[in-house]
Image 1 (cartoon, rainbow, N blue to C red):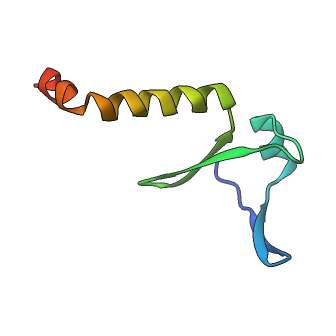
Image 2 (cartoon, helix red, strand yellow; image 1 turned 180 degrees about the vertical axis):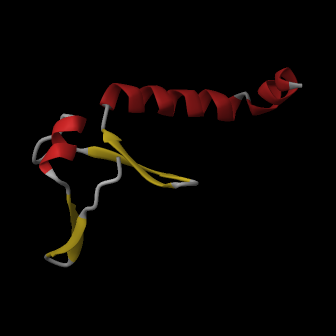
Amino acid sequence: MPTTAKIIAIGNSVGIVLPKETLARLKLEKGDTVCLSETPYGAHLTPYDEQFNRKVEATEKVMKKYRDALRKLAK
């Protein structure tokens, strides 16, 4: 269900104020880190997962190293 959020000034930067319900649903608290992904439909906000991020980075390294072999396998 769509929810609105307000963009506010924080010093020389800006921030987004998230409703309590959204924070509770995402299991987030003040000071937590989030992952913001751009999608064809807009922005996607999820809790940051350090372990998942390390796995994605490792996968990207392997894919870059074996790019040609992976392309051949995909045919």
